[in-house]
Length: 560
View 1 (tube, rainbow, N blue to C red):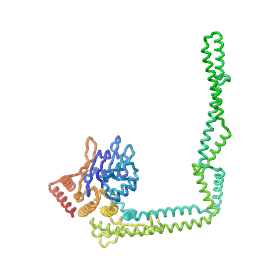
View 2 (spheres, one colour; view 1 turned 90 degrees about the horizontal axis):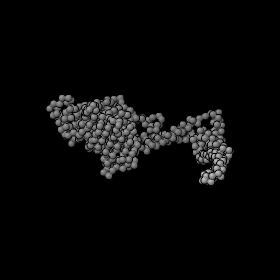
View 3 (cartoon, rainbow, N blue to C red; view 1 turned 120 degrees about the horizontal axis):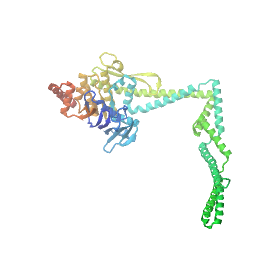
View 4 (cartoon, rainbow, N blue to C red; view 1 turned 180 degrees about the horizontal axis):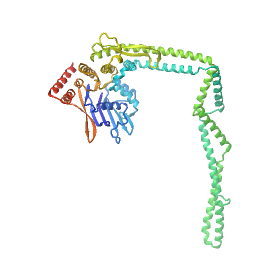
């Protein structure tokens, strides 16, 4: 169950931290106080979408943290299958930090992707949003409900149907694409033969391009190095105007001067040493140039081979491996075109066999769905009776589609009659907004028992209901809360009175900044909040008395 919610710097929330309890947690507050932000924060922490302006103060990070107590062995197994272990005390910490348009999600300190978070979050909490009951208007959702109820038994069947469907679609596509007349066939053969011959004659070798690149760089580098060393040799050599020639002439002048004055001997020694060093240097340069000899013709051959391979990469694939794969592909195509009639006959047989296999798998899936529908319908009907649908009839109608789809061959639809003598009709044709909310509550309560989801969240499940029906909804929530932790936002006093833990969400303004806060109410404060919901702006003693009686009645109902 959800133990704690910590939110910082998000929307109207500066910072809140709240502990949630077992059983029925009710949240109430004025319209616009930020009740849905609380639910939105929980949803966001589990990978849900956030608006671009969700961060309250862009100069700071936003943070959402959820602390769970994981008691269900089934949920623990699912977490471990995904490489996540709960802490020693059975707790699980999920966090999502938002900073400068980026978000980082962690579970027990380990970074996870949003897709992982969403997948795992679906096992921890079931969130019923404000308008989720509208999904009942779409038949696709009805089949999803049935498949979810069927659980693990149906998953491998659905996977087999999808695999069979994908195989059939691939073969069907191949059949359509391979339909050609004789002129097209011959034209295709000529074109593919040309490509095949071109690639085969090139005699490409694995990694050849990489080896040629290394060879080319070395040879091209050798040419450049040789040119540079040659220039250096000319500049420092003993040719006309070379450094060696100039130093030699300088040496002669110093020798003449020394013959006139023996004290100039040190200068002569220095210039002689420079002349010797330059001689040695030029000899080294000459020897080194010999090491970098290269064959211009060999370089041109390497360039030509690389140009050929690069041209093939543009035409047939961006690597030699891809080019070889393409060669295999066109060789297979040519074999099919050479033996076209035989290929088409074999393909037609494969297509027929694939279709038969798909229909067989789809039929098996339909049988299992209908088996579980017989178990699901009575459970939902019982839940509807508990929600003040006194004369309800409820069922699921199946229709077999002409063509099998990747999800099978079933078109399923919930049908309902809410009055005696009326025929059952699709939900979208007869249910009002309030009835849709109650039907969804019935479905959610049934699925929660099957899934072993520990926490259910209802954001304004009370849409379009009042009076006796509201009382029945509150009682149903209380029943669900005996087995699950329930968090519920409501505007109705009948539902709020049932709270095992009652929270008030308020909005305040300080220094022109609006802030949302949440606090757990005491017994007396809960009664006063019920009085506010019931009486509106004017709370009389009689209204408070009625609120107290409502709370006492709720306690007695809960005990029963």
